[in-house]
Image (cartoon, rainbow, N blue to C red; front, side):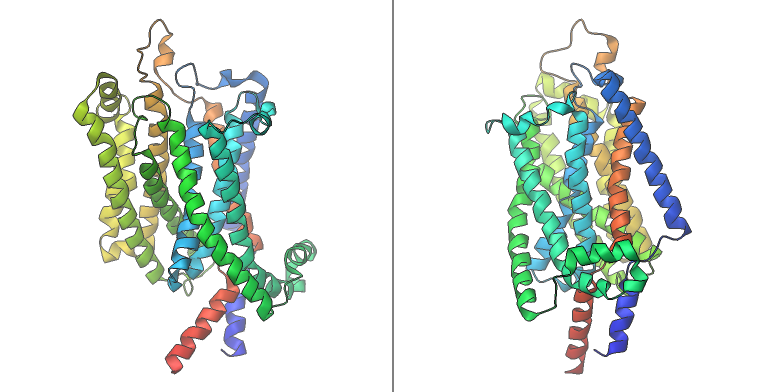
Length: 438
């Protein structure tokens, strides 16, 4: 490849400063994050009584958010590990997008668990007195492991790009230059360094797959090992994993469209990428639809009294509007859009991705709340509000603040680092040119 083409790729993919729209976006996210911090301050001061959680609905949208964040983080292993190991070349522009989504999501999944605790200052007891008999300690172990592997999978492929970034001293400014040098000044672009890094990335890509499956399986066990209608299921592990793949892929499609549009990356995130990711989304939506069908058909066939109340509450009762909204927005409508080639163009695919992400959040809410309100032992002699769960404004503010925080991490990462790998793009472009030449 000639120097002009290489310079053009570097110029296109270098991080860009926030424009007017970017600054408005950041201000909005900071506002919601600050509102969440304020609401959490009230919760710390007054206790969990500011929430709508009670004896029965002891888990609310905090745990729904936790399950959602854990689910969407699986996209790191799907794009970076599975597609890399199967030598799928078209996924290169998407790997860093997927990894930063994974890192930001798993970070806030950890934080929201602390928020859910009534006494967060006792969090250290989990490490001092954790019991291996408890699925909660398993969750802590796999989440921590998954976070560090995802962080390394984000950092190692970034090293050659940091070397490129260090060369733009005047453009970077003082503090960014110091950050780049701190993170990557040791990188010299030698063959030995590339060999070690490639080996390390392959090892991490292999390691993250069982860890990713473990994190979602263990999270499902937090529910399935609790003897309650709606959770007492051997299907929960596969049910959670299939749903996590779906929402993770949907999140990547949304991010692809936003970065492509805002940073003018049409040459790198092409229509073909949306077409391929649209096909992946259809496959994953059909898979998740199967597990949903299986999850509800078996208890509906047996129709035990406790399960009957739970199912009727979902299909025709109090939670029916949310249930059918979640089913149609996360599966049926995206499948209908993406089955057709025109639906796999950037804008329709983006709309389908939004529907998948929104519907999947409500699906997690439905996993948590209805079961808690339909215990095996009927509710007797409790206040009327114990029979329902409607989150307070503090809960909505904290949940919204955590989502805003995750988006802020992604936003600032895209401002500081290349969102598409520069070095890998140059190598692949050069390889394609050589193939055409021969």
